[in-house]
Amino acid sequence: MSKQQFPSYIGFGKLRPEKISENNNEINADYYFLDRPVHRISVNKIGKPYYQMWDQPKGEGISSGSFELDELAIFHFNGLDCIANPVFAYVRQQVCSLGNIYFENLVSWKDNFTIHTSHPEGRIALLRLPCRQDEDRLNWLDNKFENERPHFGDDEENLFYPVSFYPSRLIVTDSSGSSTTRDIVMSEFVVPIAFLYDACKWLTNERIIEKEYAMRLLVTDVVKREHNSIQIFPANKASGFPGYKIFLQGTDDKEKFEQTISEIDDHTHA
Image (tube, rainbow, N blue to C red; front, side):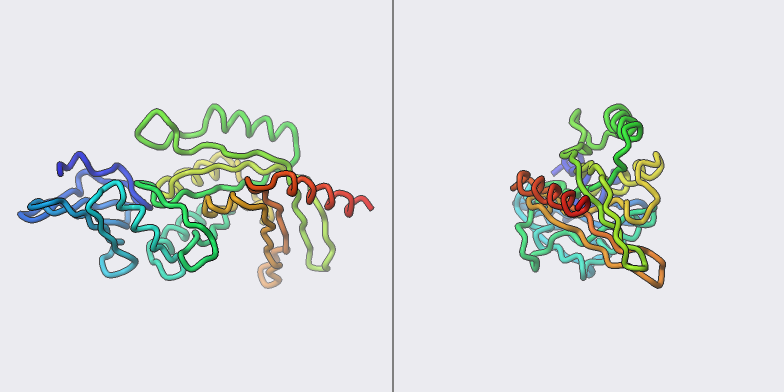
């Protein structure tokens, strides 16, 4: 295998070509998330190539191997357990430090969900952005997404792209227990996890993510798009944050979602 055959990104990390090293037995490529090495790929130089991938530092996180390079990230991220994985913990800390962002665990083999993995992405993140139902702001956002959205990936196709745009509802409960229902619009995007920090930084720097706690950007696993759901966040009295619930549309039953929204509106106006 030549040095040029290593993918430019894999999983949470991006390749630093200057960090590719070799000895008499193997070639090693290190992948970085910001300034921290998060993955290493090694391949033997003698005999049939066998690719190994470790989370960094070695001995923490998970490791995997395959005779096929284009299957490596699939095997590796099938075994991801975010609760115990230090690389995920670091990535989440850095992403959430950007601003008003909630980043939940990606789906694990322990969860009752189908795991979607691919190479070299490992996992795909779903970004769920609540937006105020304001025509001027929605037009401004549409222009941002259409004309200023950054391009991620080596090819012509942008790996950071929209997948859904739909009306929804947000129910916020204050400290007295009083609830308010708001009309909102959800804008949803996908991006490989190697570019997640870059995407969230752009959304933050451009002030696309709103500052209100209940309007946080939600980062989750793309598999969560499959079903309608209600994301519930209890109030945090110590921090003064209200409780809220947000209604999220899946791909399996849009009619049921629209019915739910209609029932919420009927109850609100009753």
